[in-house]
Length: 282
Image (tube, rainbow, N blue to C red; front, side, top):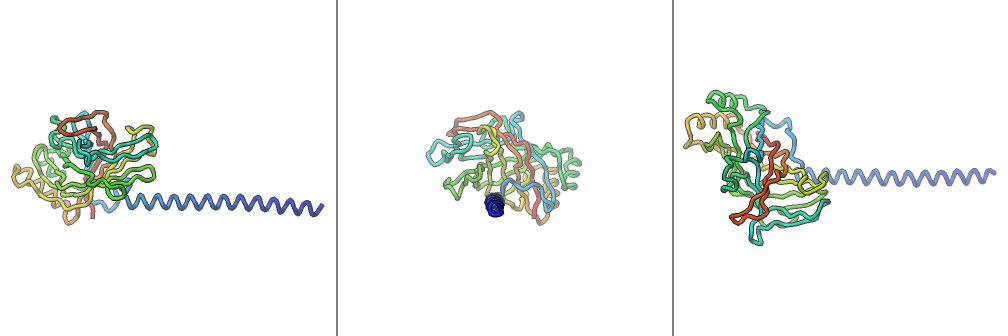
């Protein structure tokens, strides 16, 4: 009888040991997987960092199809400008080769800019006061992107697809422009736009979560040939920025449902910019 009880205890102990081993392996796998994902997201800067305490000020921008503002994505007709393709959880996706705001190169003849200033505005007290004193509001501010391109479109260098998220490293040689109504005021001489498309929660390609972020640069006053109010406001803006730098963060974008083509452009799609901001950062 004692032998039977002893055997049962040993068997029970073995079962517990096996369960503990399985649980331990599972926990370790989860920790490693989570750490790996976090490391990749940190390296890829995905998603764009929410406003951090180090941000010295920010101005919100939006760009909607209904206002003929927002972004445009397209590919060219040449083989080197077609964009790569890859399989996702919702089907095969071919990435556009070019991205800009829809006012670029008359893509949308009715567009006067890519994004308009909106609430909230954080910091920039002197700048906002200067706008008001000269009869402007933040909605008179506009941002226009030049054409960003995928370069050689090499996997692992110009783009990666990992953990259900595609990250593209787009390049440009022209600055982003901040305008006050129709007048050029500030140039933001970025050279990189990190563009991210998350397929993890999407049920179709058109429901992907889209975001982006430029590199940080020192802004430049280009208001020299503008009106006196714009020149004064530009100076106040640069004084507010001081010795810091600026970047543009697109927090949330989505397909607007409208498309375009022509002038050597294929598979053109417009995007709504639901939330973006110009940040002052160290």
